[in-house]
Length: 322
Image (cartoon, rainbow, N blue to C red; front, side):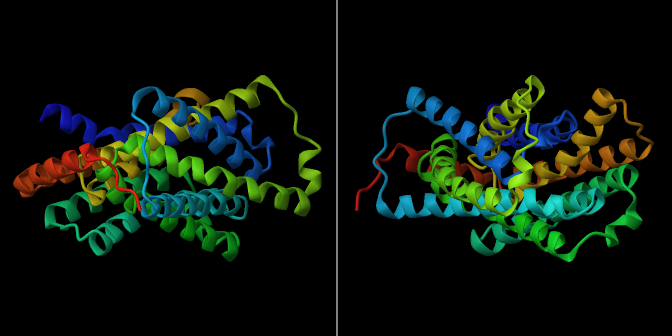
């Protein structure tokens, strides 16, 4: 039980790694145009994940239906990251931080509507506490009055990005239960590489001058390695691993830790000033995560055990061929 509880919290590590991207960006990785950067990130992450799969899991023969599902996840992923990177360029920091935290809200909604997950009052309360805590932290980090600025196109792209990443998270649940978190995220990421690659020539065509100033420096290489190996390969695996042991609506609450970790790392690594709001917001976030986890343990204990047994059985069954 303790092991299962620990693995169910694996998405917290994913959120921490994503929070570290804020510090990495300050080190200069934005010298690369956004769509090219996301292609490099995903290609590197896919290669790392595939190497691990080949070393640790038996070779699979996926059915055509499951290949289509994996391709669907790849499409969700491509849509989420490409619109996030472009949308960030078209908005200000306040808008980007605020719209990012809508991802777990979309995850809860999709978990209930698409996967028929039960949303208890305790889980709803915990999610609300975590949301409020994150907003308190962001209000101390960014100027709330700047949320109304920026372009509508960028806002729309970031809204769609939050929804698309929620789709990538939630609709991966059936494949995670049938195979494993590692296999599902690996093959979905591999299938997304050519999708991201197709966007690079478009970026070159629309803004050829952006590539003239790119300089390959040790800092840039380190940033790309962080993005590909940690915030992609490791983080996406941890995110999906949590859904082997918990509902999507329970995993969603860990996403709120991402901007909080970003603010903390900015203070520790970059020397940025933070106020008392980080303590208040962080306490609310921790309380929200605790309430959601307790809701899963007390309210759905019997059902969770049955779901775990079914998931384990589905992973041990050989895949069908069609």
